[in-house]
Image (cartoon, rainbow, N blue to C red; front, side, top):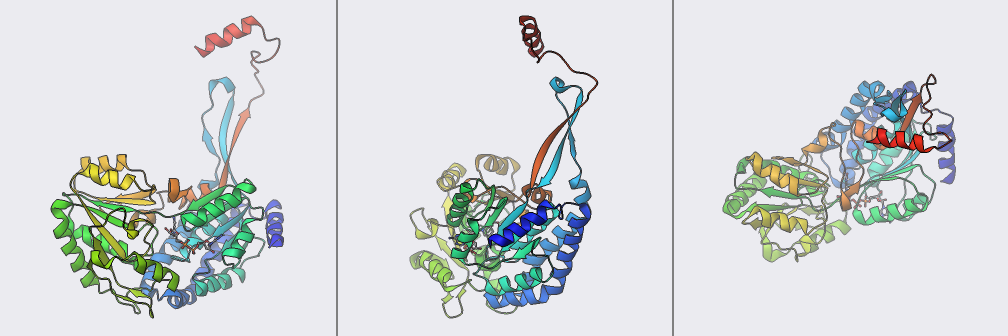
Length: 452
Ligand code: NAD
């Protein structure tokens, strides 16, 4: 492994990744590879957790294709120096921010969207002129192999290379000297990554998780709320970092909301199979999730089958902070619903937990949702929707506090893999004498006068 980092560093230092044309060529090769391997990757997703062809294409590929084509279209303008104003002290001069690639990157992906979460940062990394080692999650082994086949047969390993490793192997990778580490996964492993990076003073981007709340106020359109919320919660069988983790609903609309959710779940018929619902990724996560279900509090669902790793959509009610389901990010198809009487009560409840990756407000009153948005800290979110904010490339995607450090997507991805180099271009036709010796009282008087 140290040799691949050395090779990539040499390739980078030769300037092989820098030019606009080199970046466009890499993006074209990436796009072509993805299209040629799409069927194999979709099969691998099915083999890993019976993810359907429909969900595979819509949740893994659409954003990637969009990211590549948009990046190619806008890269020239994103690469231009950004002119900024110059303060009078430096007159006569001009100033600009030049984006430079960080260098050799380690990108570590998670299993839940194993294609998107590894390849989307890779697109930004190469567009920004970097090299990268991509480490897919060992928990989706078929996808990891398909991605290795796709990338390693098309790219010079000095530019882009997939390396497979388990937790121990990844810890070894973290000991190497990288210019940037981009990690997606749990907060617990995020700490390990951060600590390892600190030893080498390596900058990190940490895309973590958390307990993302959805608040449903009395004014919400309940039918549409249930439709959107149930879709987002049970997409990928709840194994989505920005899925609503739990719901806070106003007591006056609780019964109607629950009934509407049940209707929506029944209509969607969440069963394992070609174009339906996926499995829980592995037995470890299945057992973890099963232990979070308190049968006394199950309002709907609770159907499970360990042999097929099927866990049906499950709604729990009357949940409190001392329930197991509220002690960790659920990351599965269990939806706790908690009633509140006053908005402040809901906000106090949410603020007792770490800052989440997402938050959602369902309300038809602007004053109401603006007030909630201003009082809660979270990575990103939506009003009257869930999950979809991350598909907007104009919005940076990332967490805050325990849900992450840094952000990417669209030109924010380019920023994530670049250093913004500040440059002052000084003119030679004038030089003010004030800062140079002799440092007289008269000069100081003038400086003080100017500063006033
Ligand atoms: P995971 O088990 O796939 O682990 C993520 C990566 O960390 C893998 O590549 C794995 O090899 C590596 N890893 C595991 N143990 C390690 C160790 N000891 N040292 C170094 N590397 C190690 O995925 P996960 O952690 O179960 O992912 C689920 C979590 O990720 C959830 O909390 C979810 O919210 C979060 N997530 C966040 C985002 C986001 O974009 N912010 C996206 C998806 C998932």
